[in-house]
Amino acid sequence: MSGYVESYRGQVLASECDLLGHMNIQFYISRLSQAIWNMCYFVGMAPEEIKGSKRALATVHQDSNYLSELMAGDIIHMETAVLKASTKTITFRHRLINSATGDPALTNISTVAYMDLTARKAIPLTEAMKIKVNELMVDAEDEA
Amino acid sequence: MSKLISCYRGAVDAWECDQMGHMNVQFYMAKGSEAFAHLQNALGLDPARIRKEKRGLRFKSLRTQYKSEVHAGSALHGIAGIRKLDGDVIHGFIQLFETAFDRLSAVYEFTALYTNLQTDEALPLPGDLRDRALALADDHPDIYQPAPFVGTVMPARPLKHMFESSRSSVDVWECDIFNHIEHRHIVGYFSDAATHIMGSVGLTRHTVRSRNLGSAALDYYSEFHAPIKMSTPVLLKSGLMGAKGKIFRFGHHLFDLDSGEIAISTTVLGCYFDMTARKSVPLPEEYANFPAEKVLAKQL
Image (cartoon, chains in turn cyan, purple):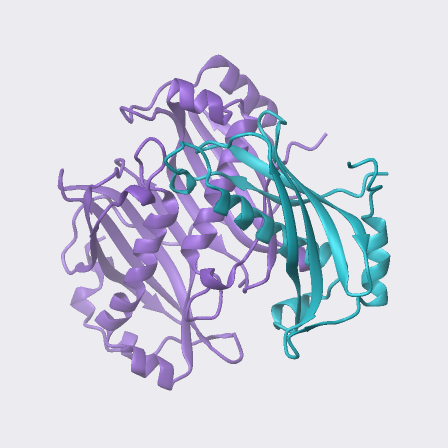
């Protein structure tokens, strides 16, 4: 079973395009940021801890492949699954897709740490999170 | 099979929140505009076709109802649908929900016209677009639909006692690929005008803060009469239409100063709230003291 969930859906703005005529890479990262906020909920974090700025998922490593150009006006969505998890971290695999054509635009592997925003330190995933993380897990070899 | 369209998923960033501690209205509009692109795609107007043919849907009218606050870190998702076709006018909606609670946060009800995006001429709906719109049209009885907008709306004619609340020109980075201003920035003008509007009633920022008050838009209704394009000098004029109980009503005219025309007329309903309790409160006494002869309702 695929563990992918939709983590972002939106559009490329003209103001996000650069001299090369396509969306600048910084705005790919902004979509990953939006996706991470959604993944906070999908991995079982409570709304109160997120909105109360108590805990969050903080990205500590990223690896991206830019696969096709995105132009102003293109509609896009992101799908995200879990590749692996450790005591304090989760590794996501994101795929950004051109919603009109189905073409992949970006694949990205991001490792995030579950962070206590008061102590400013990574903390262990909760039991509730471990259950959700397992539900979203995909086989790393299948995804290679 | 559901005729609803999945049209948005994202989140509220900290920098999208204003001094009221919630997402500013212009970012609701930004997310609504992204959602509208997915709705167009469902109707057959995919981005490549829009770029090639230079034709797409443009709002004729837009009502935005704000149902609940969202804050930094809130995850959002959106659905959209077509309610009906009336000649060449498409009636549709977009709704944004706070994902964690599946709580409705904003509702957009719109009419839209198929438009030449270079000449801004409204065109008859092409056959394939009409067919798709008809196939998607549905009353959606299970989906929230706002009651009709209450009371008088701003007419598209100049009124006395409106004052200048914003003056600007449209920057390149505020526009889409057809050099039309993105709707987010139009709402941004309205939002920036809010402090001046409060000032016109006699409420300074100091007064509002000392009373622990915030203000919030509840309901916007806009009619689009002419396009606003890149580098256009624009002037926003505003005025108090009326105030009763907890609700104030303001009107806006956004002028294209090149043509002198009113490009957009907008009616805004809003309220004040206690910044701690996050509950609405009666209007400040300054509204009762506002000169009756300056209330726009007298001219409507």
